Image (cartoon, rainbow, N blue to C red; front, top):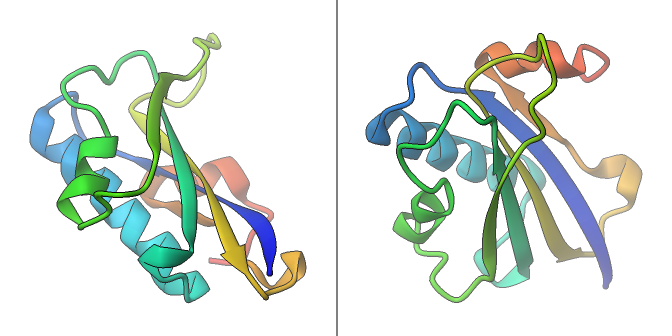
Amino acid sequence: MAVRALRGAIQVSANERQPILDGAGTLVQTVLDRNGVRPEDIISIVFTATPDLTAEFPAYAARQLGLSDVPLLCATEIDVPGAMPRVLRLLAHVSTDRARSELRHVYLDGAAELRTDLPR
């Protein structure tokens, strides 16, 4: 098995606890589902949030999904002028037999505009 990295992002509606948890949960679940990743295949997940999202840790949403034994880390995305607001990102490291070209990165809602090169 190889270690591979999966990327994803979602734009949330507000800097409020529930939109952050809902968005992060949707993002994690969609990345796992689209790539056939089981919880035991996850090595770690790094979450970032744009500086305008401070109401909750996105990693808490992964814990609510049952990922209690997966190392999780949250960080703040760099504050680039003019960047899209209210964006949660993730970088998941997984064990998989799939080739890198078979992986499907996930960009949801407004964040889909960040990667217009990917199929939707």
